[in-house]
Length: 323
Image 1 (tube, one colour):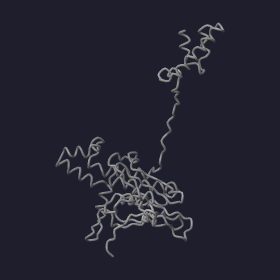
Image 2 (tube, one colour; image 1 turned 135 degrees about the horizontal axis):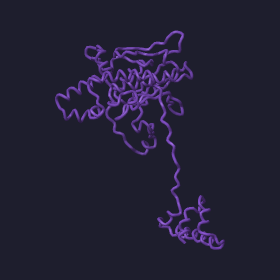
Image 3 (cartoon, helix red, strand yellow; image 1 turned 60 degrees about the vertical axis):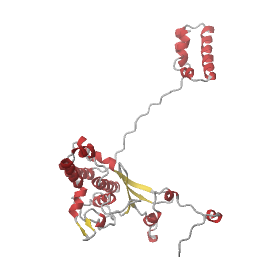
Image 4 (tube, helix red, strand yellow; image 1 turned 90 degrees about the vertical axis):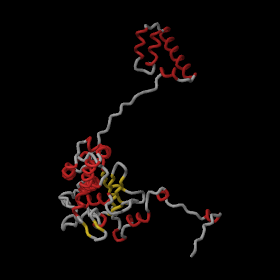
């Protein structure tokens, strides 16, 4: 069939149907979402959990959620901006940080359900393929599916770093090694050592060493925060090892203490002079005159006017005393 030009006449606009709002905004891929959300009919009310990973300019967001008619329900969440608490203060959006965030999410979720002692995952980081299997006589492994959103799922994407961290943390997520760093599409072989280097931040450390030798100014500009926090290339692996251990030791989210807000009263009679309202100024003078008349008719001394303090007339005491 040849190319047919769309004639936008009355019939076209009359039958036109707009797409979903989040599709119009370019936020949701409904073709993928339908397959991630719809549960098997023989599983009845069992939720279908998704591991949502989103990478922003300054943060990495990992969430476990399931869909309901009224909206998605978030079961657990972890963010890369929490990593400074565990010793990772720089590079919060690289592959190593994505792995740490996924690990934090998995340990926090299992801790919440009381399964962290049953499914410890892979404690020693090898970068090789690892799958969580259910243990007989114990609750089944927590299963969820990766939701990468609109990100391009290319080999080496940071989304898969978060996935690997969650799997090593004890979650059961269907995956293969074809999208991890270290997979060669030509030979179809996976090098786990290359993947481990990315998890430990060694790819960043190698680039730091390269810039230190080739271009000192570019190094200072690119890694200014590393220099500020005294992070050298040789310290990278040890920093991430300590972070992994700290996450496993205490993955629980700690709420920030609420700040006590002191209520302030900004409106006062003295502020009426600052307004350009004639009615406000006249009201102020009327109130002042009333107080003066009370003092005169009752033959009160001016120091007795202090009894009025603490009332709504307290703001005009100064005017009365001047009188």
